[in-house]
Amino acid sequence: MVKHLTRVCFVSLLVAGTVSYAQSGADTYKAKCQMCHGADGMAGTPAGKSTKARPFNSPDVMKMSDDDLIAVTTNGKNKMPAYKGKLTDAQIKEVIAYIHTLQK
Image (cartoon, rainbow, N blue to C red; front, side, top):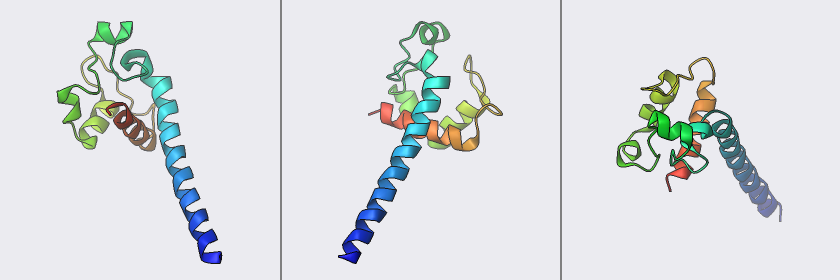
């Protein structure tokens, strides 16, 4: 019985940690990225269209590594602003993890 409870608690903590991580990435995305990239990541917003933001499921974005996506988010690219100094490294990684959920 104690082993079972320990497993349940451990699994609950893992799930809670994962949900928290994804949730914070979603919150940051909504605050900083959604205006251009859209709620669905397809860049169909007026701002996304005017800046020619790429949909997250486009082949060129899909083939980018996490390091590539982190670099673009940190340093900016084309009309995308740099978030260095505006978001922490952890927040940027959380946003990238959230972006992957939009690519599915």
